[in-house]
Length: 392
Image (cartoon, rainbow, N blue to C red; front, side):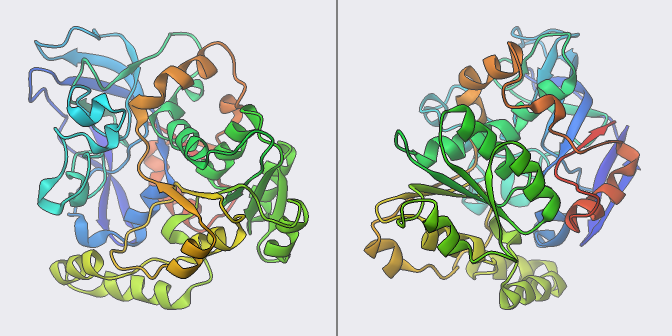
């Protein structure tokens, strides 16, 4: 089959690789019909090379058609249309029963002290072959794949793999009180969807902050009050529209790709030049993140408010303004989305209608063979790229 594989920093290629096969009785094989390019994939493209091997298959936002099932699978059959959550959860352990599928005890990566395994996402998360490919082996066939109806286009359902549950959890974790306000830092795919989810749930005002004109315009067209990080005095401007206090909650949808921290950017580049084992030890022990967005979130949020972090961070000893967090009595919530946890809330929103605008959410739809060019375009924020979907 054809699959997008990692070959080094900023070097991904579409190669011919072995087809996946049934390995466990509960496995299913899915023929991928649509798969997304996530902002987290850029972390692999630029930063997390020490935890990747050449030839690793990337991608964690797939959907498709069940082709084959293991002998123990009864919940799906060949021909079923399914979405595959990005975190690999068994659905039956203690953590899954708590709705913490991202902490699944069956797939935790104990070697690195990490939570549930992820598709297409480094040794830290199990080094499981990913979904930017023609076929994907999916474990826990009775509990992990999400069946969706035939008929509507893939765009209606593919975001159930990551974007929708990640945004939904970020807004739920933000815990905006009735009549309260929310600011979203970063208007890439997750941040953009956070603004849509928040508006759908009745939050007003919803404030969006970014520095890419196309992303600001896109959010503005959806009724978001936007501010340009490069042009506006963001802290004062946001306080002016939130009674001088700041928003009740702030979502950091940026993570380690934040701009404006040259020392951390330099640390990331230096880390990428070190031999693999040494670089891995450095990343697991020290701070290599650019924390501009998180620090801004802490500054923006009102006293007694909540900061919800959906952007991925990778350093183990990043400096945090503990005095400010304590003094402002800020609540901080974060974590990988518990994808399966949110399906009862999300499936009706993409099955019975399209209140979140998912059918028009993608900015680019490309064949998988153009994935290397798409990664470079998305990383450089060119051509108005917000969300890229591939057709294998």
